[in-house]
Length: 380
Image 1 (spheres, one colour):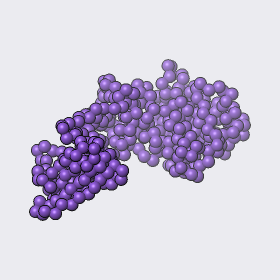
Image 2 (cartoon, rainbow, N blue to C red; image 1 turned 180 degrees about the vertical axis):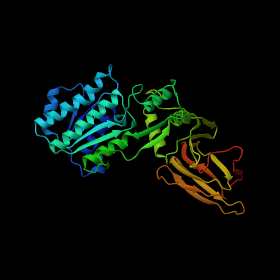
Image 3 (tube, helix red, strand yellow; image 1 turned 120 degrees about the horizontal axis):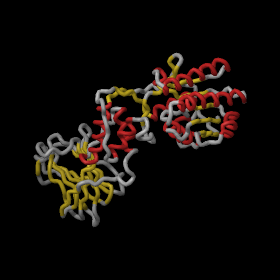
Image 4 (cartoon, rainbow, N blue to C red; image 1 turned 90 degrees about the vertical axis):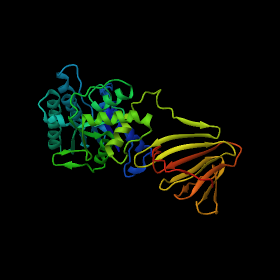
């Protein structure tokens, strides 16, 4: 299949192009039914002669090009109606009846220059489909967010992400203002569904099935919590789809010289212990480094439980019940990765048996609370 995409340098266009390339090149095998031959990329900087060539060969058209921040209002109609007319005219000229998907906006319902131009483009598309027997798909997108969206342009989410990540101020005029949002990956997924003839249609219009509603103030609070998480080692609630997607979006705006952040290493002559991540409901993740022939631990817990994974070096983890003399030993090594559960009610320690540092990845079911440590010293 040959696919024409207009507006390929735009936010949605760029994401769609890269996803289709992954399918074409066999990097994304989840769409095995799709056989993509050519992806024709057309944008404002392209030569109009290219459009002629593409309109002859395209078997599906994604019309994503448009204008939303012109220098004067007349450019709305020229960009959102005028170019659509040019595109459809060329398809008619070459007798190409390939399906056409156009990205419109929920603002097409509003009486403003941008909305009017989007509505005009929609009407032109519907007329074209009816008069020429062509399948047309018109999507009225709400606010789209995700990676590669231009900040300080027409997306509050992109601007907030960029400014907060770069220590710049944001302006929230009305914290209670309700935002209707769709995630760019969901938009792209729906575009590909439409390409496969499985569009989500509700009467005349098509839509992205996953829509999020959240206030502007809540978005700002979440983004500031993501920034703080690099200090308090917390992670967002990944079970919440919006929070997961917003966090991924936020990370894409980090300054290129600040991808990394330091951790506090608790160091003594035995080695070090460094907390990596702590969560409210999934415990604490840490890395422990033990010097050669050093033993750490010798304590037990009532309810706290842990998992140990030695990733480098070799050692032994020993267990004993407080009322028993029986010692249980598990020999561990970075040469054979295996997780050892640390059950409650057993005093335990870990000894480095090697001549090099031993590195152990540790998980505890709860973040350490100094006021309720649930940790009781007892030699194994």
